[in-house]
Image (cartoon, rainbow, N blue to C red; front, side, top):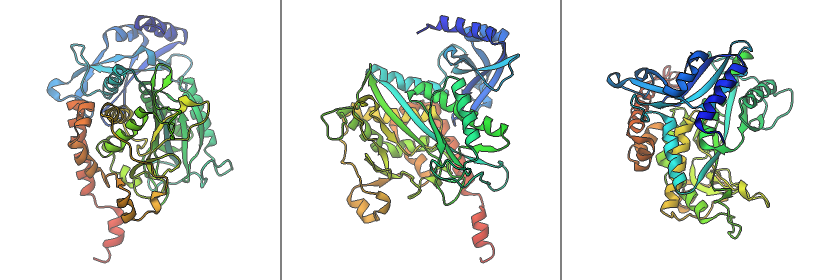
Length: 445
């Protein structure tokens, strides 16, 4: 593996060899929106050594006016050429860490939150791997009522799936940027699709997820349509999730696997699941951060709202995919409630923190629920001790507000800014007069 100086030399050489003129420096705000500004290749060497200063007060959840100056420090390991850029005077991108003027890490940088959490895992001897399944919809445009492109269903391979070409171009762009893809397919709902990224370490995957969302939208625009990661854009069909597969490794060994257990789960694996279940209500405001997120998190439509775990049962919040002989390292835990409009740096951080808490404090794990919970009545769920996730963003934020786990993980800056922002979002939603209200009440009340 190259050291940092070697990586810088590699980037400079790669830029010259590929006639790169512009480098876009990427970072995210607290809500997970991708931000960027461009420098010329002549500034690249200085940028990698000194960073590039900018006014953070204009970025959501970053600095106040009186403490606005921050520095974007490019991470040379993330240098990739944008495959749709021109061959002459091309464009590349690099993710940045955001620093204070004195060189210390900026508390409002989501990437730093994930790095801090991964460091805690590393101190315990663990490497955290994730594999998210990001679903999305294609529509004719982003104006007016959503108009679907097809009426296809899950894994359809027919003329109904007119978006095959869009998925193909998206996969080619992802691979051109060094992002491994496992498979792509039509999802359950009309005009809904999924491209699964190859399992990798959590920091790389958070960067990859941000890149993925941009590429999906870029390709859609080039084809004259619109792609959205909005969790629930259509009534009466499945919403878009980001089921997140997770595992912890020590060296080359998956610590979740135990061949002698009836579930093939180690004590660490069970405690990790228990930690996720125990703290799921606290972290859901991060993994599902929008008012619209909770239109997806309702019983039915494969939405995982019930706080329980299972192996085959997809109505539970956590699923442990069945073990395959000879595939011990594939043992993993699937957290099913996150949606693809979350901030992946923060989402991966709180998921890992919840799991590590379970391991550190040896949380006991309840028995799995293999029965379809969607078909249980309320009394039966109560008897089984099955709780549900918050019903809306306001409930989720109120629970998160009391969470020491989330506050410690995010740090005071992001914790406070995130809550402040979400309370504003909820108040705007609460006072909005919707089309539903006008259609149902205006002419009769």
